Length: 417
Image (cartoon, rainbow, N blue to C red; front, side, top):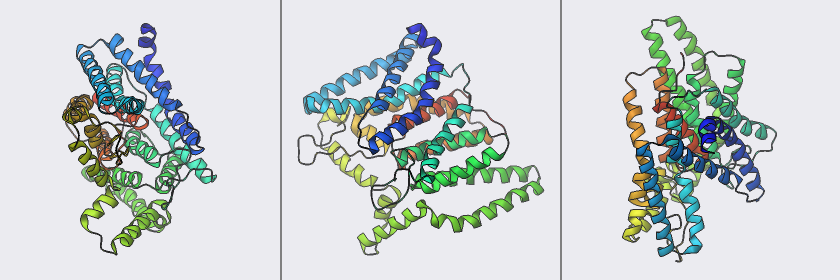
Protein backbone atom coordinates (compact mmCIF):
# COMPACT_ATOMS: atom_id res chain seq x y z
CA UNK A 1 0.00 0.00 0.00
CA UNK A 2 2.80 2.42 0.95
CA UNK A 3 4.60 1.73 -2.33
CA UNK A 4 1.38 2.35 -4.28
CA UNK A 5 0.83 5.68 -2.53
CA UNK A 6 4.41 6.77 -3.20
CA UNK A 7 4.29 5.88 -6.90
CA UNK A 8 0.81 7.14 -7.63
CA UNK A 9 0.44 10.04 -5.20
CA UNK A 10 0.79 12.75 -7.86
CA UNK A 11 -1.92 11.17 -10.01
CA UNK A 12 -4.06 10.75 -6.90
CA UNK A 13 -3.63 14.42 -6.06
CA UNK A 14 -4.61 15.50 -9.59
CA UNK A 15 -7.76 13.36 -9.41
CA UNK A 16 -8.53 14.89 -6.02
CA UNK A 17 -7.88 18.38 -7.41
CA UNK A 18 -10.37 17.87 -10.24
CA UNK A 19 -12.91 16.66 -7.70
CA UNK A 20 -12.88 20.04 -5.91
CA UNK A 21 -15.50 21.92 -7.97
CA UNK A 22 -17.60 18.73 -8.21
CA UNK A 23 -17.53 18.30 -4.43
CA UNK A 24 -18.47 21.94 -3.91
CA UNK A 25 -21.31 21.81 -6.45
CA UNK A 26 -22.69 18.55 -5.06
CA UNK A 27 -22.60 19.99 -1.53
CA UNK A 28 -24.28 23.18 -2.74
CA UNK A 29 -27.10 21.30 -4.50
CA UNK A 30 -27.71 18.85 -1.64
CA UNK A 31 -27.68 21.49 1.11
CA UNK A 32 -29.88 23.77 -1.01
CA UNK A 33 -32.53 21.06 -0.80
CA UNK A 34 -31.79 20.50 2.92
CA UNK A 35 -30.13 17.15 2.31
CA UNK A 36 -27.27 16.94 4.79
CA UNK A 37 -24.72 14.54 3.32
CA UNK A 38 -21.07 15.07 4.26
CA UNK A 39 -19.49 13.33 1.25
CA UNK A 40 -17.20 16.27 0.47
CA UNK A 41 -15.95 16.43 4.06
CA UNK A 42 -15.28 12.69 4.13
CA UNK A 43 -13.38 12.78 0.81
CA UNK A 44 -11.23 15.72 1.94
CA UNK A 45 -10.44 14.19 5.33
CA UNK A 46 -9.55 10.91 3.61
CA UNK A 47 -7.12 12.80 1.38
CA UNK A 48 -5.61 14.46 4.46
CA UNK A 49 -5.06 11.02 5.99
CA UNK A 50 -3.35 9.84 2.76
CA UNK A 51 -1.17 12.97 2.93
CA UNK A 52 -0.07 11.99 6.43
CA UNK A 53 0.75 8.45 5.27
CA UNK A 54 2.71 9.92 2.33
CA UNK A 55 4.68 12.26 4.60
CA UNK A 56 5.45 9.69 7.28
CA UNK A 57 6.26 6.61 5.20
CA UNK A 58 7.28 8.00 1.79
CA UNK A 59 9.08 11.27 2.54
CA UNK A 60 10.66 10.28 5.86
CA UNK A 61 11.90 13.75 6.72
CA UNK A 62 12.97 14.02 10.38
CA UNK A 63 11.71 17.60 10.78
CA UNK A 64 8.35 16.74 9.24
CA UNK A 65 8.01 13.68 11.48
CA UNK A 66 8.71 15.82 14.55
CA UNK A 67 6.07 18.32 13.37
CA UNK A 68 3.51 15.52 12.90
CA UNK A 69 4.29 14.15 16.37
CA UNK A 70 3.78 17.62 17.86
CA UNK A 71 0.47 17.89 15.98
CA UNK A 72 -0.61 14.49 17.34
CA UNK A 73 0.27 15.56 20.90
CA UNK A 74 -1.64 18.81 20.43
CA UNK A 75 -4.67 16.97 19.02
CA UNK A 76 -4.65 14.69 22.05
CA UNK A 77 -4.39 17.57 24.53
CA UNK A 78 -7.09 19.52 22.66
CA UNK A 79 -9.42 16.51 22.80
CA UNK A 80 -8.73 16.00 26.52
CA UNK A 81 -9.43 19.69 27.19
CA UNK A 82 -12.79 19.46 25.39
CA UNK A 83 -13.77 16.40 27.47
CA UNK A 84 -12.70 18.01 30.76
CA UNK A 85 -14.02 21.55 30.30
CA UNK A 86 -17.02 20.74 28.09
CA UNK A 87 -18.23 17.13 27.73
CA UNK A 88 -18.45 14.24 25.29
CA UNK A 89 -21.54 15.76 23.61
CA UNK A 90 -19.35 18.57 22.24
CA UNK A 91 -16.51 16.27 21.15
CA UNK A 92 -17.78 15.37 17.66
CA UNK A 93 -18.30 18.98 16.60
CA UNK A 94 -14.96 20.08 18.05
CA UNK A 95 -12.94 17.28 16.45
CA UNK A 96 -14.57 17.85 13.07
CA UNK A 97 -13.55 21.52 13.11
CA UNK A 98 -10.10 20.69 14.48
CA UNK A 99 -9.39 18.39 11.52
CA UNK A 100 -10.94 20.82 9.03
CA UNK A 101 -8.73 23.66 10.24
CA UNK A 102 -5.45 21.71 10.34
CA UNK A 103 -6.11 20.30 6.88
CA UNK A 104 -4.19 23.28 5.45
CA UNK A 105 -0.73 22.89 7.06
CA UNK A 106 -0.72 19.14 6.39
CA UNK A 107 -1.64 19.55 2.71
CA UNK A 108 0.76 22.52 2.38
CA UNK A 109 3.75 20.45 3.57
CA UNK A 110 2.68 17.51 1.40
CA UNK A 111 2.46 19.56 -1.82
CA UNK A 112 5.73 21.35 -1.03
CA UNK A 113 7.44 17.96 -0.88
CA UNK A 114 5.55 16.51 -3.85
CA UNK A 115 6.58 19.32 -6.21
CA UNK A 116 10.13 19.66 -4.99
CA UNK A 117 11.38 17.58 -7.91
CA UNK A 118 8.25 17.44 -10.06
CA UNK A 119 6.68 20.00 -12.38
CA UNK A 120 3.03 21.01 -12.28
CA UNK A 121 1.16 21.58 -15.55
CA UNK A 122 -0.76 24.85 -15.17
CA UNK A 123 -3.32 23.63 -17.72
CA UNK A 124 -4.96 21.84 -14.79
CA UNK A 125 -5.62 25.19 -13.11
CA UNK A 126 -6.88 26.67 -16.39
CA UNK A 127 -9.47 23.89 -16.70
CA UNK A 128 -10.48 24.13 -13.04
CA UNK A 129 -10.78 27.92 -13.27
CA UNK A 130 -13.08 27.57 -16.29
CA UNK A 131 -15.17 24.96 -14.43
CA UNK A 132 -15.73 27.27 -11.46
CA UNK A 133 -16.81 30.08 -13.79
CA UNK A 134 -19.15 27.83 -15.80
CA UNK A 135 -20.74 26.31 -12.69
CA UNK A 136 -21.78 29.86 -11.80
CA UNK A 137 -22.44 31.28 -15.28
CA UNK A 138 -24.57 28.51 -16.83
CA UNK A 139 -27.02 28.06 -13.91
CA UNK A 140 -27.41 31.83 -13.60
CA UNK A 141 -28.24 32.51 -17.25
CA UNK A 142 -30.69 29.56 -17.17
CA UNK A 143 -32.22 31.00 -13.99
CA UNK A 144 -31.31 27.83 -12.09
CA UNK A 145 -28.68 29.33 -9.79
CA UNK A 146 -28.91 29.72 -6.03
CA UNK A 147 -29.12 33.14 -4.42
CA UNK A 148 -25.99 34.43 -2.68
CA UNK A 149 -27.92 35.84 0.29
CA UNK A 150 -30.98 34.57 2.12
CA UNK A 151 -32.40 38.08 2.43
CA UNK A 152 -31.75 41.77 1.81
CA UNK A 153 -28.88 41.62 -0.70
CA UNK A 154 -28.88 40.24 -4.25
CA UNK A 155 -26.62 37.95 -6.26
CA UNK A 156 -26.39 34.36 -7.52
CA UNK A 157 -23.78 31.69 -6.82
CA UNK A 158 -24.66 29.25 -9.58
CA UNK A 159 -24.70 25.80 -8.01
CA UNK A 160 -22.21 26.66 -5.26
CA UNK A 161 -23.39 27.06 -1.70
CA UNK A 162 -21.17 30.01 -0.80
CA UNK A 163 -20.43 33.11 -2.87
CA UNK A 164 -17.40 33.81 -0.68
CA UNK A 165 -15.83 30.41 -1.40
CA UNK A 166 -16.10 30.53 -5.19
CA UNK A 167 -15.25 34.26 -5.18
CA UNK A 168 -12.07 33.61 -3.19
CA UNK A 169 -10.96 30.73 -5.41
CA UNK A 170 -11.26 32.64 -8.69
CA UNK A 171 -9.60 35.68 -7.06
CA UNK A 172 -6.42 33.92 -5.92
CA UNK A 173 -6.14 31.75 -9.06
CA UNK A 174 -6.50 34.55 -11.62
CA UNK A 175 -2.95 36.00 -11.29
CA UNK A 176 -1.48 32.51 -11.75
CA UNK A 177 -3.67 31.97 -14.82
CA UNK A 178 -2.53 35.29 -16.31
CA UNK A 179 1.13 34.28 -16.09
CA UNK A 180 0.56 31.42 -18.52
CA UNK A 181 -1.57 33.19 -21.16
CA UNK A 182 0.67 33.26 -24.25
CA UNK A 183 -1.75 34.89 -26.70
CA UNK A 184 -5.19 36.46 -26.75
CA UNK A 185 -7.61 34.34 -28.80
CA UNK A 186 -11.38 33.93 -28.99
CA UNK A 187 -11.42 31.39 -26.13
CA UNK A 188 -9.56 33.75 -23.83
CA UNK A 189 -11.89 36.63 -24.73
CA UNK A 190 -15.02 34.55 -24.05
CA UNK A 191 -13.60 33.30 -20.75
CA UNK A 192 -12.68 36.88 -19.76
CA UNK A 193 -16.25 38.08 -20.46
CA UNK A 194 -17.70 35.18 -18.45
CA UNK A 195 -15.25 36.02 -15.67
CA UNK A 196 -16.41 39.64 -15.56
CA UNK A 197 -20.07 38.53 -15.53
CA UNK A 198 -19.49 36.08 -12.65
CA UNK A 199 -17.49 38.59 -10.63
CA UNK A 200 -20.07 41.36 -11.05
CA UNK A 201 -23.21 39.28 -10.50
CA UNK A 202 -22.11 36.95 -7.71
CA UNK A 203 -22.85 39.82 -5.32
CA UNK A 204 -19.80 39.95 -3.03
CA UNK A 205 -17.17 42.70 -2.90
CA UNK A 206 -14.07 40.48 -2.78
CA UNK A 207 -13.92 39.17 -6.38
CA UNK A 208 -14.69 42.63 -7.81
CA UNK A 209 -11.99 44.38 -5.79
CA UNK A 210 -9.54 41.53 -6.47
CA UNK A 211 -10.19 41.76 -10.21
CA UNK A 212 -9.74 45.54 -10.15
CA UNK A 213 -6.43 45.16 -8.27
CA UNK A 214 -5.13 42.47 -10.64
CA UNK A 215 -6.08 44.37 -13.80
CA UNK A 216 -4.82 47.68 -12.41
CA UNK A 217 -1.43 46.38 -11.29
CA UNK A 218 -0.86 44.45 -14.52
CA UNK A 219 -1.90 47.44 -16.62
CA UNK A 220 0.53 49.72 -14.77
CA UNK A 221 3.28 47.14 -15.22
CA UNK A 222 2.63 46.95 -18.98
CA UNK A 223 2.59 50.73 -19.33
CA UNK A 224 5.89 51.09 -17.48
CA UNK A 225 7.43 48.23 -19.50
CA UNK A 226 6.34 49.73 -22.83
CA UNK A 227 7.63 53.18 -21.85
CA UNK A 228 11.01 51.68 -20.93
CA UNK A 229 11.11 49.86 -24.26
CA UNK A 230 9.99 53.07 -26.04
CA UNK A 231 7.06 51.30 -27.73
CA UNK A 232 4.79 54.34 -27.75
CA UNK A 233 2.62 53.11 -30.64
CA UNK A 234 1.81 49.87 -28.84
CA UNK A 235 1.14 51.86 -25.66
CA UNK A 236 -1.49 53.94 -27.43
CA UNK A 237 -3.13 50.76 -28.76
CA UNK A 238 -3.44 49.47 -25.18
CA UNK A 239 -4.64 52.76 -23.68
CA UNK A 240 -7.50 53.30 -26.15
CA UNK A 241 -9.44 50.10 -25.25
CA UNK A 242 -8.58 50.67 -21.57
CA UNK A 243 -10.22 54.13 -21.66
CA UNK A 244 -13.23 52.71 -23.53
CA UNK A 245 -13.54 49.92 -20.93
CA UNK A 246 -13.50 52.45 -18.07
CA UNK A 247 -16.18 54.56 -19.79
CA UNK A 248 -18.39 51.53 -20.47
CA UNK A 249 -17.99 50.31 -16.91
CA UNK A 250 -19.59 53.51 -15.58
CA UNK A 251 -22.79 52.44 -17.37
CA UNK A 252 -22.59 48.71 -16.68
CA UNK A 253 -21.52 48.59 -13.01
CA UNK A 254 -24.69 50.30 -11.62
CA UNK A 255 -26.71 47.42 -13.10
CA UNK A 256 -24.68 44.69 -11.38
CA UNK A 257 -25.37 42.82 -8.13
CA UNK A 258 -22.10 44.15 -6.75
CA UNK A 259 -23.21 47.79 -7.07
CA UNK A 260 -26.78 47.11 -5.91
CA UNK A 261 -25.45 45.45 -2.74
CA UNK A 262 -23.22 48.43 -2.02
CA UNK A 263 -26.27 50.72 -2.21
CA UNK A 264 -28.34 48.34 -0.07
CA UNK A 265 -25.58 48.19 2.54
CA UNK A 266 -25.09 51.97 2.69
CA UNK A 267 -28.84 52.59 2.92
CA UNK A 268 -29.12 50.05 5.73
CA UNK A 269 -26.33 51.73 7.70
CA UNK A 270 -27.93 55.16 7.16
CA UNK A 271 -31.27 53.87 8.45
CA UNK A 272 -29.64 52.30 11.51
CA UNK A 273 -27.65 55.43 12.39
CA UNK A 274 -29.99 58.21 11.17
CA UNK A 275 -27.51 59.17 8.43
CA UNK A 276 -24.73 59.56 11.02
CA UNK A 277 -22.29 56.70 10.29
CA UNK A 278 -19.11 57.05 12.33
CA UNK A 279 -15.71 55.84 11.12
CA UNK A 280 -15.56 52.80 13.42
CA UNK A 281 -19.02 51.59 12.42
CA UNK A 282 -18.24 52.11 8.72
CA UNK A 283 -15.03 50.07 8.95
CA UNK A 284 -16.70 47.27 10.91
CA UNK A 285 -19.87 46.96 8.83
CA UNK A 286 -18.86 48.06 5.35
CA UNK A 287 -15.28 46.77 5.14
CA UNK A 288 -15.30 43.82 7.58
CA UNK A 289 -19.03 42.91 7.46
CA UNK A 290 -19.21 42.99 11.28
CA UNK A 291 -16.20 40.71 11.70
CA UNK A 292 -14.65 43.18 14.15
CA UNK A 293 -17.75 42.79 16.31
CA UNK A 294 -17.47 38.99 16.08
CA UNK A 295 -13.78 39.27 17.02
CA UNK A 296 -14.57 41.39 20.05
CA UNK A 297 -17.20 38.91 21.28
CA UNK A 298 -14.88 35.92 20.85
CA UNK A 299 -11.95 37.82 22.40
CA UNK A 300 -14.05 38.35 25.53
CA UNK A 301 -14.79 34.62 25.70
CA UNK A 302 -11.08 33.85 25.15
CA UNK A 303 -9.96 36.32 27.84
CA UNK A 304 -12.49 34.86 30.29
CA UNK A 305 -11.44 31.27 29.59
CA UNK A 306 -9.26 29.06 31.75
CA UNK A 307 -5.43 29.26 31.37
CA UNK A 308 -5.33 25.85 29.68
CA UNK A 309 -7.82 27.12 27.07
CA UNK A 310 -5.64 30.13 26.34
CA UNK A 311 -2.81 27.70 25.62
CA UNK A 312 -4.80 25.06 23.70
CA UNK A 313 -7.84 27.04 22.52
CA UNK A 314 -11.45 27.62 23.54
CA UNK A 315 -12.69 25.46 20.69
CA UNK A 316 -15.58 26.09 18.35
CA UNK A 317 -18.40 26.21 20.89
CA UNK A 318 -18.09 29.38 22.98
CA UNK A 319 -19.59 29.68 26.48
CA UNK A 320 -20.58 26.02 26.51
CA UNK A 321 -23.46 25.09 28.86
CA UNK A 322 -24.45 28.74 29.35
CA UNK A 323 -27.18 31.00 28.01
CA UNK A 324 -24.54 32.74 25.84
CA UNK A 325 -23.51 29.61 23.92
CA UNK A 326 -22.30 30.45 20.40
CA UNK A 327 -20.72 28.66 17.43
CA UNK A 328 -20.21 31.85 15.38
CA UNK A 329 -16.66 32.11 14.09
CA UNK A 330 -14.85 35.43 13.71
CA UNK A 331 -14.28 34.80 9.98
CA UNK A 332 -10.84 36.38 10.23
CA UNK A 333 -8.54 33.37 9.92
CA UNK A 334 -5.72 34.68 12.10
CA UNK A 335 -8.05 35.30 15.04
CA UNK A 336 -10.05 32.13 14.50
CA UNK A 337 -6.91 29.99 14.70
CA UNK A 338 -5.63 31.90 17.76
CA UNK A 339 -8.86 31.84 19.76
CA UNK A 340 -10.07 28.38 18.73
CA UNK A 341 -6.67 26.69 19.11
CA UNK A 342 -4.78 28.86 21.57
CA UNK A 343 -1.15 29.90 21.52
CA UNK A 344 0.19 26.38 20.88
CA UNK A 345 -2.28 25.66 18.08
CA UNK A 346 -1.59 29.05 16.48
CA UNK A 347 2.17 28.39 16.40
CA UNK A 348 1.76 24.86 15.03
CA UNK A 349 -0.71 26.01 12.37
CA UNK A 350 1.33 28.89 10.99
CA UNK A 351 4.87 27.49 11.48
CA UNK A 352 5.09 25.71 8.07
CA UNK A 353 3.59 28.77 6.37
CA UNK A 354 6.11 31.15 7.97
CA UNK A 355 9.05 28.90 7.01
CA UNK A 356 7.88 28.62 3.42
CA UNK A 357 7.01 32.33 3.08
CA UNK A 358 10.53 33.26 4.19
CA UNK A 359 12.01 31.32 1.27
CA UNK A 360 9.38 32.58 -1.18
CA UNK A 361 10.01 36.23 -0.28
CA UNK A 362 13.78 35.79 -0.52
CA UNK A 363 13.32 34.36 -4.03
CA UNK A 364 11.73 37.63 -5.23
CA UNK A 365 15.02 39.23 -6.27
CA UNK A 366 13.55 41.24 -9.15
CA UNK A 367 10.05 42.29 -10.15
CA UNK A 368 9.19 40.78 -13.51
CA UNK A 369 5.82 39.72 -14.91
CA UNK A 370 5.92 36.29 -13.25
CA UNK A 371 7.00 37.58 -9.87
CA UNK A 372 4.46 40.39 -9.95
CA UNK A 373 1.50 38.04 -10.41
CA UNK A 374 2.78 35.46 -7.94
CA UNK A 375 3.07 38.29 -5.43
CA UNK A 376 -0.46 39.46 -6.30
CA UNK A 377 -1.86 35.98 -5.67
CA UNK A 378 -0.04 35.68 -2.33
CA UNK A 379 -1.06 39.21 -1.26
CA UNK A 380 -4.69 38.35 -2.05
CA UNK A 381 -4.39 35.14 -0.02
CA UNK A 382 -3.24 36.96 3.10
CA UNK A 383 -5.60 39.90 2.55
CA UNK A 384 -8.66 37.70 2.08
CA UNK A 385 -7.74 35.71 5.20
CA UNK A 386 -8.02 39.05 7.05
CA UNK A 387 -11.01 40.71 5.39
CA UNK A 388 -13.14 37.68 4.51
CA UNK A 389 -11.78 34.61 6.28
CA UNK A 390 -12.14 30.92 5.40
CA UNK A 391 -9.00 31.06 3.23
CA UNK A 392 -6.62 29.02 5.37
CA UNK A 393 -9.17 27.14 7.47
CA UNK A 394 -11.69 25.96 4.85
CA UNK A 395 -10.51 22.97 2.75
CA UNK A 396 -12.42 24.10 -0.36
CA UNK A 397 -10.20 27.22 -0.44
CA UNK A 398 -7.06 26.09 1.34
CA UNK A 399 -6.25 23.34 -1.20
CA UNK A 400 -5.60 26.07 -3.80
CA UNK A 401 -3.73 28.23 -1.30
CA UNK A 402 -1.50 25.27 -0.44
CA UNK A 403 -0.90 24.49 -4.12
CA UNK A 404 0.00 28.09 -5.07
CA UNK A 405 2.38 28.46 -2.10
CA UNK A 406 3.96 25.03 -2.68
CA UNK A 407 4.62 25.84 -6.35
CA UNK A 408 6.01 29.28 -5.48
CA UNK A 409 8.18 27.72 -2.76
CA UNK A 410 9.69 25.32 -5.30
CA UNK A 411 9.86 27.96 -8.08
CA UNK A 412 7.54 25.93 -10.31
CA UNK A 413 5.38 28.85 -11.52
CA UNK A 414 6.81 30.06 -14.79
CA UNK A 415 5.25 31.84 -17.75
CA UNK A 416 5.95 34.15 -20.62
CA UNK A 417 5.33 37.78 -21.50
